[in-house]
Length: 599
Image (tube, rainbow, N blue to C red; front, top):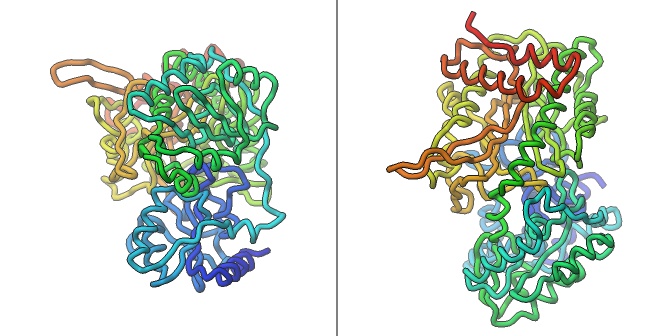
């Protein structure tokens, strides 16, 4: 069916059930807010927009797709001819989707959605707001599933595997004990782990149910005596079964959690209402809910010494692959046969040669010139650009290794650049460096630091409509909270202080629609600095070992201190990565890390 046909079929189902507005979020039943299995991509199926963020809303005479600034240009292209209106989140005059749902549900009307993919927090807010209109919620049926029918992808069934202590630094039994101690401290009888990463971290297991994210679709319920792990048993290997037996983990069917929750009575249940779906919330009636972020979220955010050591090692291997790639691009672009797809495929091949490589940490963004203005652009065999020896190629990529997760962006000069292109690149680099070299007191959040990266661009009245940095998991999700670096008020009112051992990215950029995109990204570990009368100071340790593009830097926009920073960074890369390279790759790195001077 075409998009218009799908929407029409949905409207027919809505009319039969007297539903006035139907809400289709991006989330799965774990409330994952970005990457999900194909089975859960209902928002994309109903709108035609393939980006990883947003929602679709359908009424009798309107269909809209809400997404944020990372995806505006992409959404403009993908929504053409669908009849779906692009609603630009956080832009003047555009209501947020929850407010739109409330405003457009009429008096005595009905708002519908699948209760398994909407959070309890949003469910309660909508229920309360609609009571004033004497309107009701219809959440017992997934209407998109009816439209999709037999063509809907199946739930993934990839096998689990154990990640040994030499990579994690802790036995699963120790992690379970930490979780139970946190429960005891909070007075919780039961802890529900619904975010996909939490059971994986706690039990030292990984999966492959979501492309580029080593997790498995599973829930976990923890008490002081018992652990129930909810998963399809087809995913269990003999080694994993023994691992679970050794750690006293009981395996239950994936679909059994809802029934098990209804059996709880009078318990204090720790469940993050932002990651607890509405159906599970309803099943917990008769219990007291402790609405707080899972303790595992904080545990996995602060890496231990083994995880940090391994993460550094992963970045060394990743740097080898990236430098080989940069040399390949610079050497081959002049031959006129390079495409975005051939470039990204070559990078996949180079990373796959590194020891303990598992998979990409996300789908590579390899975008030439105007395509790079789409922050999460994906080149395909059907739709891609030829790469020419002029302008920029933006490559945002990463790898998941058994010892760590990497994420790096380099914007590559492919030939002679205009003075404006060099200026923009250098301004992005200035902001990147200002954040990278920040020192700050304990208690500082990413919201406090974000302006450091934006300031050089704001001075020219330029902005990038996304965050500056995100947390990174350890052999888990490449985008992982609760820490992050972003402008504006904290998301959901939760501001998380940066702490020693947290990993965050530093990735400011410039995106000129239909013209170009520039982004520079390194990963950083929060580390302790001096402690004195004023308190504990912190800073960032850079763990990305790939040079910036000297061909794109205009020194006139850099201070002497900034030039010294860059030259010292490049010298460190040559000393650290140079011995691992041979032949033309080593020669390339020697030149790429040469000292930059003023003309």
